[in-house]
Amino acid sequence: MGFVDASSTLINPRARRRRLLRKRFLRRPLAIVGLVVALTFIVCAIFAPVIAPYSASATDFNALLAHSSRHHLLGTDELGRDVLSRILWGARASIEAGVFSTLLAMAVAVPIGIIAGYYRGWIDAVIARLTDVLLAFPFLVVAVGLAAILGPSLTNATIALGIGAAPALIRVARGEALALREEDYVRAAVANGASDVRILIRHVLPNMLSTLIVQATVAIPAAIIGEAVLSFLGLGVQPPTPSWGVMLADAQSYLSQAPRLAVYPGIAIFLCSLSFNLLGDGLRDILDPRTTR
Amino acid sequence: MSLLDVEGLSVRFDTDDGPVHAVDQLSFTLADGEVLGVVGESGCGKSVSFMSLLRLLPETASVSGTARFDGIDLLAASNARLRAIRGRRIAFVFQEPMTSLNPAFKVGNQIGEVLRRHLSLSRADARRRTIELLDLVRIPSPERRVDEYPHQLSGGMRQRVMIAMALACDPKILIADEPTTALDVTIQAGILDLMRDIRERLGTAIVLITHNLGVVADVADRVLVMYAGRKVEEAPVHDLFARPQHPYTVGLLGAVPRPGSGRLQEIPGRVPSLAELPKACAFAPRCPRADELSHSQVPELREIEPRHFVACFHPGPNAEVAA
Image 1: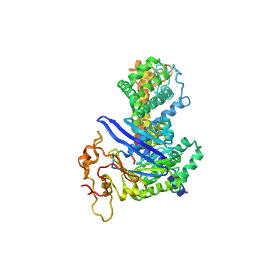
Image 2 (image 1 turned 90 degrees about the vertical axis):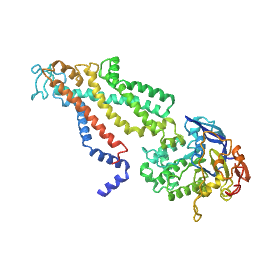
Image 3 (image 1 turned 180 degrees about the horizontal axis):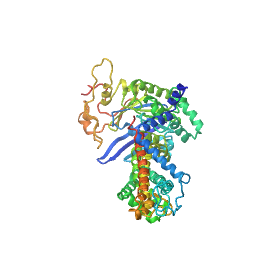
Image 4 (image 1 turned 180 degrees about the vertical axis):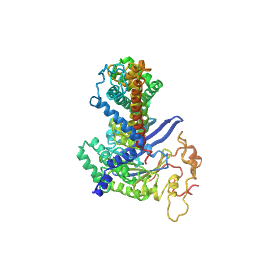
């Protein structure tokens, strides 16, 4: 049996590549930690209604600004709401904003970047210069400005973060397309009569996927922090819906009496974005064709 | 009536350092089922000439002349028209088998893509035909190879895949640009053997672009020698090797290793820059036969014996002829 298994993975290249990637991944403990923590946050976000001991807005007037106890593991806030429950529910806003804004940024940036990089010429000049202009503004400034224009809500914050992240991704996609258009297999595809659309979708896009995946894992933590900032400023999630940014904002007034109200959501933001960053670093290492170990 | 009739083909690149005349007034024909060898040093315009026919050059290239193929002028055809010809009627095989296949797809899918696009085959039919093609180019166990990725194949094997892809739609012309240069010698012989086989079995006309005269002697019917963007000699392969006329051809032949003939002869000097076309024989600065005339006029192409053309004021088979 063992022999059969070995030969079947030898023949199936995909299985072999997967195994190689898994081996490389397992050799990076930080990446594994990142993956585990990130997955934990995602699970918390999805199953918040099941896991959380209380509803996020349930108030307990017998325990206002309470310390940790058996009933409230992380204590309660000024309205007697359970902090742990609010953090678990708050993961939803963060993960949602992080993932969907990155997907939106990809959907906007990748086609634009590919077209600029593949066709060159005036269209590239226009897109590249506009991107440069947008990149001159810090990411958060753009996001805050857009969120202010669109109006405060989680959806609008996500859109603002996605658009704010797009210029950097356009640049990455354009750079990849610039390099890939010179590849011999792209030239060969042209010589074989492939249409432009087919070349872009079949030959250019798939070969830049690993770079895009890595970029996505870098963009997600930035968006998570961005969501917290927008919510903190009142431009994102609106109370009473829980969000780590909103919790931080609420905690300000009680900083001297109950600093833990700011510490817990702060730790959540820190851990969540750090875990995605570590995961991204690990993925970059294993997907980079230059590191072939 | 020839299959491909090229007349007055000129290619100019507009670069930052001014124009570069890569090809100057090139004319030639290609008959049905013929193997035409195109020989010359790097940068003499051999690849550029043929890539220009299918508009595969960067946009900085401006191409003029006519190229009649199957009743249309390729150089004046619309992009859509050309796309239908590329890979379907005229197919290219490039020099670099290692990088000419998309690493993200199985080789079978890449060949199948061409079949499905040009011949509208179904997925299953394309796969069946792909296996046939891999078998045709003598890839062992094609049923297995069809599902492999390019990185799992050796260089020679990848070049066979490239040839299979080029042959997929049974093209009238196969243009092979240095198909063996990147391969080691034993593999080269196999690929050349395959080329001969293809011509015999499928009747495909083949243009073999190379700087290797040995390759030409092996498979070509007719040879076209290019120098600095111009055609300097053209002859049936036996005539060219028996009685080379242009001193450049003589020099090239002197640079082919033969056992027992001692040190190889080199051609002194370098290929001229193509920034401006000299009003003289481009080879004159390197030529032992060059005289006043060579330096002041462009030699016309003359038919020195039947089907043997040379552009030289002092043609002859020996290096010493007019020295």
